[in-house]
Image (cartoon, rainbow, N blue to C red):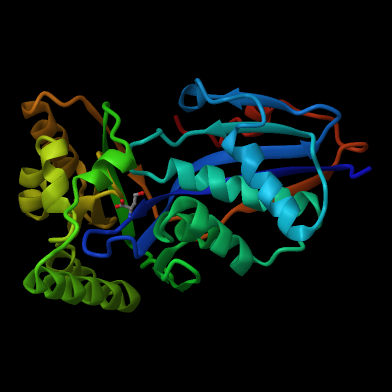
Length: 324
Ligand code: HSE
């Protein structure tokens, strides 16, 4: 009998960073926790507002993803006890589904002694999510530059500049990635493609070289943001003028509706925060702001012996670390 209890803390993420559609991602200091152990009977405990309504049977995503790990490793673990708490709002563009996938992959792998490499987990996570940007950031931490051809995902990690922080404005309404991807055209012009290749390249060079002043010129996009703007009232005006209110650059976070401003933490961010809230309010959009720093670590894994360490309900275990 396997006596392991595994607890994994996984960072949220922002994808695209403006021009790097399905390519760039950055891990953020907002977290989800997955606890997993082998059990006589499959059971789920979900905590927090963002977990309401999720299935508590074997159709659950966490369970299904864990089974993929066991299958890949050639072991059978049919019954699991799974707990999860998430501070990451669902369908807002902060990578909540990627954290669930990465959390289940990493927890299941640790439960059976980590036979799968991180690269293998990245391949599996990318296939499950359909793009590597969010899962790469949650799995490796920091800033991720990635590419996927449908078979293999590759990435390079960039250490975020020590003064880089972010301000996110999270609208109260949800926007599914599916709907936000549906708004995109199937073809773009050569001029728009060149526009994005140049900005994305410039952004990667700026982030890698710590050239924070270049972000305002590089964090521009013509592949997805203009098409998604209609789904997020106030977004176009914010993208146009946030740098005049203290942002280094601003973008739609993932598929939205959250907007993310990159900020130099040595500057006063209050005027920017007020600007974002005012612009959204003018459009009748209720939103909350959060200051999130880049998370430089991937998942933090704790493995316990269930015979030696008594079970502690997940919320009690992570008390003091929870944000929302
Ligand atoms: N790159 C993805 C998109 C991230 O923009 O659709 C959201 O899942």
